[in-house]
Image 1 (cartoon, rainbow, N blue to C red):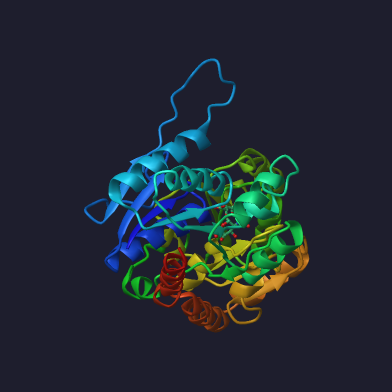
Image 2 (cartoon, rainbow, N blue to C red; image 1 turned 120 degrees about the vertical axis):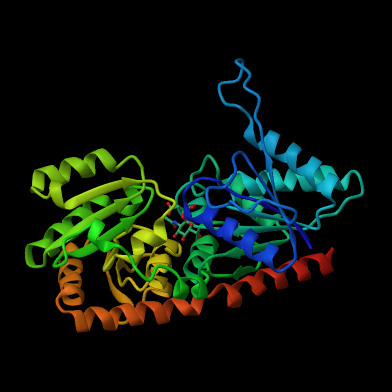
Amino acid sequence: MKIAIVCYPTFGGSGVVATELGIELSKKGHEIHFITYKQPVRLDLLGTTIRFHEVVVPDYPLFTYQPYELALSSKLVDTIRKYQIDILHVHYAIPHAYAGYMAKKMLEEEGIFIPMVTTLHGTDITLVGNHPYYKPAVTFSINKSDIVTSVSESLKIDTLRLFNVNKDIKVVPNFIDTEKFEAQYKDCQRELMALPEERIITHISNLRPVKRIPDVIAIFHGIQKEIPAKLIIVGEGPEQIAAMDQCKELGIKDRVIFLGNSNEIDKILCFSDLFLLPSERESFGLAALEAMVNGVPVISTNAGGLSEVNVDGVSGYLSNVGDVATMIADGIKILRDDATLNEFKKGARSEAKKFDTHAIVPKYEELYESALAAI
Ligand code: GMT
């Protein structure tokens, strides 16, 4: 099949999932066309079966807001027509499903019929899309998609609760290539980051308020009182400065390393002993799954789809949002001795296997087939 994928190209779960999906589909012989404003950060495999088409929005001083949706739908029309694309798969409803629907309608005028699959990722539903300013357009574009998928049962329930959706939503969870991780990094070089007696605790996100960064720091602060440890924070975002101030105030500045955005997530997770994800909301928690596949137990909240990924007492522990005291106690429980830590590491790895690429990607292929058959 020839598949056009629209996604956000920056650091962030939806873009990562879309990119990994494109890469996997191309390995299976499909021709993949990424259409977005920048080459996706995890996409370094351009070639005959993966192409990237840049959406350029000309800057016109008269406009306060440059019309990205317009440029995207025009680029979609051109690309779909030129490469005779079979399927359009848009990741993140805003504004991709909206622009995709316009492209579909424009192409219909020329007698070209292309099914659109929309994957809902989380914040497009629970945070941004739910705003009254966007809601009618998001509802419309979900209902006009040929197939709608969500990355967890929890997100499906949220979508049906928040929007007047008349489409069946198929749950296709996020995925990870578990075989790849078994082979890589025999030597993690953890000595670069911490002393031999120190545990390494990690948090990776876009450092937005929804991730509850003050809780990340407070949990680490509590754990390191009992167990020598370092905290590595990966990612960039609006909470970073406040987080640095909090570390200074708590007197743990020297134990917390802010690494910024990184393309070496797996290397970092390789030497991590514990992953913190105390989010307010999380439709799935791809970062938790990435930790787990690297054998890193997860302390998370039970918000959204996190309980579908992190299994309490097996791959880590779950708590209510804001229950920092329990998260500290659970972190200490996991890290206190090597035997317990190794048990949780094993548990994390084996739970991650439920989301293996080879089990999940065929679900998307089946959906593409059924959308094509229905057209
Ligand atoms: O977590 C973020 O803020 C980024 C966001 C995104 O849109 O890229 O992530 C969402 O999609 C990921 C991939 O499906 C999910 O794993 C994340 O849980 C989800 N984030 C939220 O729901 C807050």
